[in-house]
Image 1 (tube, rainbow, N blue to C red):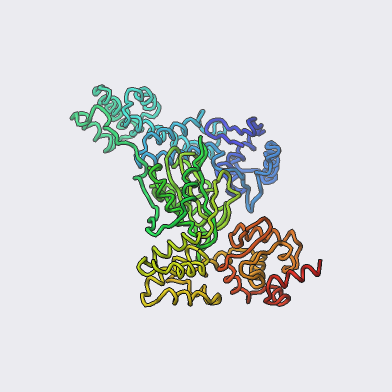
Image 2: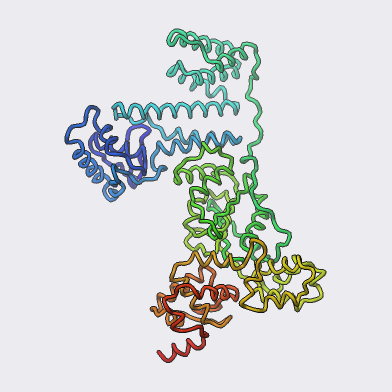
Length: 612
C-alpha cells in the first residue's frame, strides 16, 4: 500500500485507490501515518478527530472509526492494530510520501555536503515531485493546520536548496522566473530574496538585483518594523561594490565522501586461494543486479584474510568508498551487532554527521540506500551471523559491490554468489608455515613441515599460530614442535598465541548452536573415530530420536561448517573440531554419553545392525 499526504489524502492498494469513508476515518488515518509503525495514544487520536471537545461517546466512536478504516483496507486490514494505550499502523516509512520526502531531502543535504551536487539535485527534484498540492488538503482543523505548515516549510526549504544548487551549477537564467514567483508568494522570506538577487546579478541584471533588495527592505520595515538581516545586507553591499563574480564559481569534480577507505591491511603472508580469487573476481553480474559475494567456511579457515585480499584487488573499480564492518557474528565475548547499529556505522563512515542519521532502523536502511545510490562503493561485511543480520545492510543498486564472510552458508540471501572455503591443500599449508616460520629453519625439512601442518589439520589459523610460535622460539627444533602437537588431548592448548587460539574460535561456533545441535556434536565427538564417517541413522540411534530429526541436525551442523561431507548423507569431523567436541563431554547430555559410554563409532554401528 502507498499513502499520500503531500496533497489530497489518498491511499492506493495494488494500484487501486482505496475509499477511506468519512472525515473521521481520514483524520484517524493521517494521525497514524504521521507516526508510522509507532503507537499513537487514544487521547491524541480523539483530539485530532474532533475540533471541539470530544463527546462522551468519543472512545466508542474511535473504536467504530478504527473498524471502518480496517474494512476499507480489505485484505490489508491487519495493518491497523491495537497496541497498549492506543493504535499503530504497521507500514514502512517509505510507503508514506511525507516520510519518503524527509528521507530524500536529508540524503540530498548529505550529498551536497560531500560535493556530490548532481546527486543532491536529483534527490531534491525527486523529493519535490512527490507533492501535488498543499499538504493534507481538505483536513481543515487546528491539529492538521500545524502539521501542514511544518510540511510546507520543509517543502520551501528544499526548493530553496535545489535552486541554490542549480545556481551553483551556472543555471541562473532558468531559475529567475521561479524565484520571482516564490518571492511574490513569500515576500518576507529573506533566503528566497537572496537567491533572487544572486540570480539576477549573475544574469547581468544588477540594477534589478539591487531593486529586489530595496523592495524587501521596505516591506520588512513597513510590515515588521525591522531591517534586513546581516546576510541579506552583506549580499546587497557586495553586489553594490561589484564584489561578486558574474558566473558561478567552477565546481571541483565530484567525488565520493573523500574517497574514504576503511579496509584492513592486506597481509604479506597471504598464501594460496588462487582458484577462489579467480572465481570471485569473475562473478560480477550484468545489468542492474547488486553483486554480493559470500565467503563461508569453518572457524580459522581464512575467510577474512581472503575477503580483505579480494577487496584490495577490486578496490580500484569502486572509487567512492571502501567500507569494512566486523558484524561480530562469531566473536568471543561480544554479541552480534544489530543492523541498526551497523547502518549507523556505515553512514558515519560514508561521511554523514550524527545529527543526519535517523533513529529508526528502517529509515537508516533507506538513508543508506539513498547515500550509495549511483555510487561505486565497496562494502565488506565481515563475520556475519546469518542472512537476517546482513539483509538490511545491502545497497539497492548494482553499482556497489558487497563482500560477506560468515561461518554459516548464507543460502537464504537472494542473489548471492557463494564460495565455501576448505582447509588448505598440504602444499599451501606448508608454504604458509614456511613463510611465517622462516625458510632458513624449514627449507631442508619438508617432511617435518608436512607433519606439523598435518597435525594442524591444514587449518590456516592453526598453521599460522604454530608457525609464529616456532618463529618466536629459536631454541625449538621442528621435532620439538611435532612432539608438542602429537598428543591429541594437548593439541588445542598448544595452538594458542596471545589472544588468538583455535579452541576459542571453535568455542564461539559451539555457543551459537542450539541445544540439540550442541548435544549431537558432543555425542559424535566422543563416539566417532578420527576421520570416521557417520550418517543420519547412526546419529538417530545416539540421540534416541527419529532419523529425520537427526538428519536435520546433521545438515545444520554441516551448514555451520562443524561437520564435513565427502559424499551425500555421509558426515565426518575435522580432527581439531572433533578434539574440541570431546572437551565438551562433561556438559549436560541427558545421559546419552552414560548410555553409550565413550565408545567408538564401529561399536555403535554394530548395535544399530542388531536393532535392525
